[in-house]
Length: 69
Image (cartoon, rainbow, N blue to C red):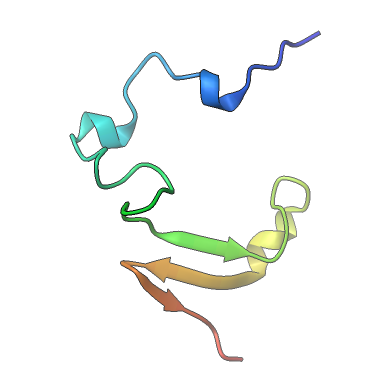
């Protein structure tokens, strides 16, 4: 039986890529005042891999891109 560890309590033993690049004050999490590129999907790709084909929008550099089809 696997033991479940709450995500907020677990931290990896190695630094995140943002920490390694000394950019963790700007990138590396979805938080206010942080930069993020986001792909929003219509569905949960962990349950249905075809959800990756249903992109609702992409946010890059603070600009939202939507397919108007």
